Length: 379
Ligand SMILES: [Zn+2]
Image 1 (cartoon, rainbow, N blue to C red):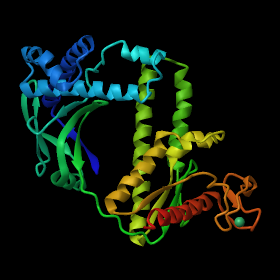
Image 2: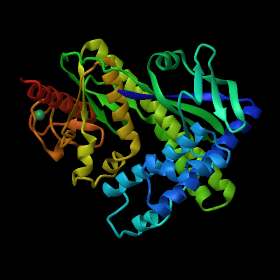
Image 3: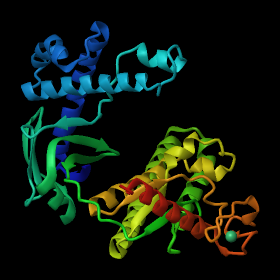
Image 4: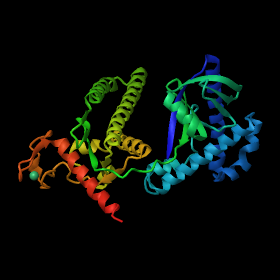
């Protein structure tokens, strides 16, 4: 399983200047290679190197940096082609697609730059790296990380790391290849219902409230309304900053919730049943605004976090059909819209079973998990 570890660099002002100059230079070079790729139609790394390597060397780029720049451009074109093929940019002839196809891929001056072990070495105990820049090799650039991250880097870091500049802060994003943990045969399943008021509710009745996250979102929505009327540059900057803070807060909230759910499953020897949200998108029942929000990246991210934390712990995960989990009675199976007298409540019109609506839904997800697991592991 692939995981990424992000560490924050703490460069001195001189080191930061050298890193900044390096990103600028590499991305200028990438722009040059990209224009060549576009005009010649050559986008494979090997062929692209023949066309552009000498020019990059002439610009003063080192051999390894030149190769990385060429690889970065080749990768970008491969991703673009895959996106075009998958129809992510519209059908052939769509305005957006024509716009993208009609010009070379552009690299922002501060776009991320990949580094391999020859250009970047890690001194994990000292928490420093030595990194190639256009101003020569920088030694002892400090970084911060948790002990857990350091152990992960020491044991499992493989291949390239990306140098990233984001909101004036420097990061290295390293890829780790972690061996799969064998899945423990589950002793029952915990169902997890994802929602707005309660971000996650388990069939055991644990509700992870979205109160603080929703408060932040609400505050930002109001601020957005006020600032959007202004349309000044500083208002736009503030909005962008707020959006990022909100996103970071949501990511952190999702990590905390996912961890709590997986730890509980590990402790009780249960598996975890989640709604198959991919399925929801293809369904037509999207009238409720809450369903629309289910599409948002935050829900997919929470599902993804639970999924990988569970895999890492050897906890079984199963994705179940999400249809009618909120309208079905988890005691007798009766499906009826009228089972939901209000947003929070569930009361079965057939057997009289009453429960918090999210807990009832989570119980349905849990029993579907048990049934699906039995079917898929029958042999
Ligand atoms: Zn019932």
